[in-house]
Length: 211
Image 1 (cartoon, rainbow, N blue to C red):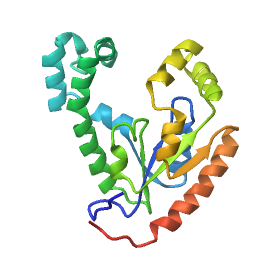
Image 2: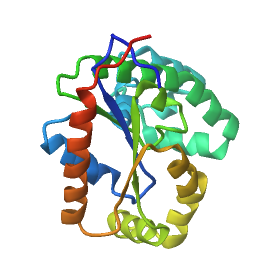
Image 3: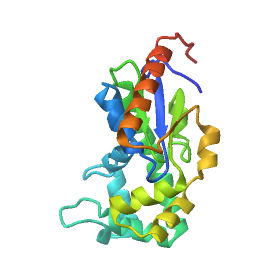
Image 4: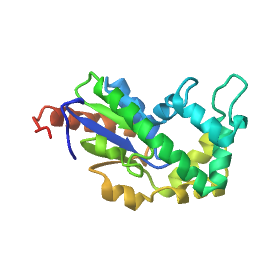
């Protein structure tokens, strides 16, 4: 993947399916002093009150997608876009470039030896082009379902439907440079993240050409 002088020396893209433990792994990296840019947070930032995207969304869907305080009613928007694939595509065309720009700016200001871009849609949206290496937090599908069911109170059927709408494990594994299999407890995940952290520290010291 291309590197540029306008970003930190090394960027790891961290991703994983629902219930894989992506958020838990991200928290461990943060505890180790690694700067993390969360794509989900950036997705909220670009539609904050006063941002141009919010006005465009309200003009497109109507004022009913806004809360009384003027902020975005994300649940109302989700209902609209999941009911109509065309509307979902429209929203993605609007927001994905803005999210990508916000992510790039935050990565540029990172100060740790390497930075992490944490994104559930890292590969699907092409955000991996901003990274030097992709780390997949992986888990057996049965564990993904059980973890999500316990965490969110969702039914197994609902979780399975969400998983069916995402990339498969095989698709993610084929695109990842590194894989952490999170099939144990939190302590095991922490140990695996610490080991990977040392690998990335070493990789971040290797000079690379800019293009």
